[in-house]
Image (cartoon, rainbow, N blue to C red):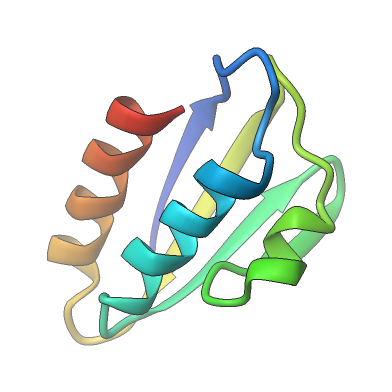
Length: 85
């Protein structure tokens, strides 16, 4: 399992548009991906689960990547987070 943390900088947090982009990116990965924030966990491949976390600006999210291609998927998600939130 690979894990990384990211502090959300977007003023609106993880609202519909960036959440949708995250789900699209996660879905393109072969690994299982979960997001943790404030004691809650969600499957990153499910839009309503991600939005239900209520991620706000300055929240520290942890993304867990598990699977055969976890190294590449983790790198892809880290780059995605840096570019989009």
